Image (cartoon, rainbow, N blue to C red; front, side, top):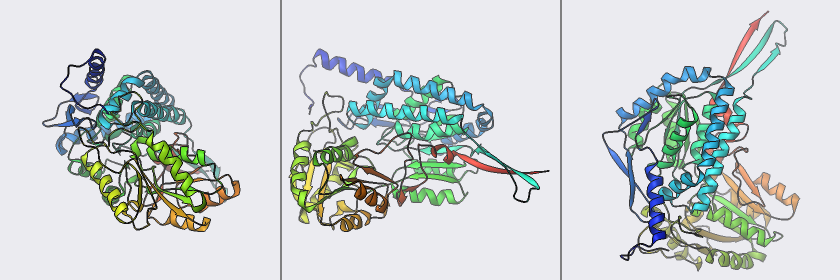
Length: 499
């Protein structure tokens, strides 16, 4: 990992510094409402988690300043709803092409504000852009229905109409993809929106707004409010009767609070909340494939994902071999700033995240878990924690019931299939589960028995713009992506036609 030094910078270091400064400078930093970028009375800093240094400052909107974004969205709603689907589709397609063309710039912005390695950031840009392409295609396929009433005395006409102005709240861990996963279907359906990015990572959404502006999104259709006072700013917008849809990705605790607010106006909601994903490895699994799957499910985004494998459950007879192989692979992962070549393990988002992971690992070891790799915080600039492997993790360890959100693989064992399913389901969460087995019957049987909205069968990654993403139990309501993703932004209207 590169450490700060008083030595003069080399030419390559100066070039890299210039690229970083240029990428940050390319992002508008004001409040975006009604197609205009405006300054706010206050500003808030955006930090590089790999150094702790301030990258730039962005608008820190007050409730009064944020109100302008909803005003703009409400004013633009009628015209945008009346815009032909093909025109909406073409705007989304143009935005898709711009994002692809500017992958390197958008990826660098994301890495600087969030920390993930550049290779992963480029992958997220591609993933994010694909939501725009997918929903560009869905915009022209919004359908309805027509049928004869059973009594034959009338006809039923069923129409699909945009729900109206939407409030979209995105997280810091996938700052660009979670934006397009919400904005794409909203635009395709004919809805205007106000999007509030996480205060840790506002630059990716601000850059996305500028891309959409260039793609031809009309004034007021997409608006962005950045703020360090989320509760004060968003509560009035949620309670405003002009807001008809709330889509949130984040913690279950915050999601529950937002659902309570949304209930006051019976607002439509979509919630992608926390997870506690089990990763099951049966004795007949291809262990090499299972190890690679575990790496993908655990280490994507430095473990900072609601879909991350939080509890790795391995059948007794292969547990030691699996642990040895996984530990060897985890030990090979380079750690450092995400902009450095070859880095796989970047920084966590902030000091609090490092404190949390440190405490969870300490608790597990204190309760009898065996530390195989890592386990000690890294001193120096930035918020780094090493790839860590624990085995013999007892069920009472806190990390078995809490999202680690860090690069920690916690391995426990099971004896039977029934036991594995029971342990996997012993959680209030149900976002995603993973299992590895070469027995197709077992794979399907366990997949159906797992209480999760998504299952990765012999796969460590399930996310795909063409698939319905979402959870059950306390992991959320609604689905994003896939054919159903646009339904979350549409109302069904029935018209009875007399004969």
